[in-house]
View 1 (spheres, rainbow, N blue to C red):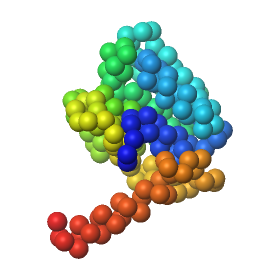
View 2: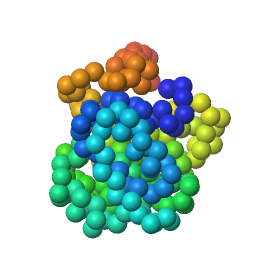
View 3: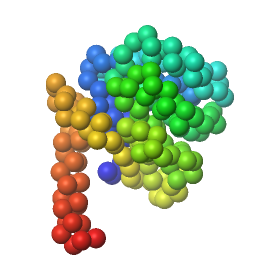
View 4: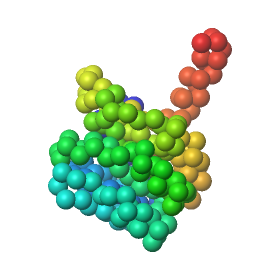
Length: 188
């Protein structure tokens, strides 16, 4: 979609969480804090696990937080350029699926997609948002996102419509089906 990495935050916040739902944000620096601000703007009840500058929340404290409350989603900034922190996605995902299997796992991968390992299917991630201008190394202007079937089911089961027109999945998913139908017709 035409936009920046920040549009990815809007896509997640407008479509996958409703006002009043709980979200766990793993705080690793400026970008995770900004993602938290976006979620709160859309009405999410955010709990933030912050780590000291240059570090990340550790798995035992994440496990404790997930055990104490049911979260709709957890967000993690894979690489936070402001602090240089690299989050351990594979271990994090395994922990979330073990302790809180219904919690969606959303990754801000703007600074990691194309340069750090991300195995979307094997790690059972529910969303990875990125943009063209950082790790991918192309001109700015594209917000690139991938969402799991589980995330799309969460969107489809919303009680209220998305709080954004431009960022609404309703306006973008028909184009996906159009493209898939065209590819099938061409047998590509």
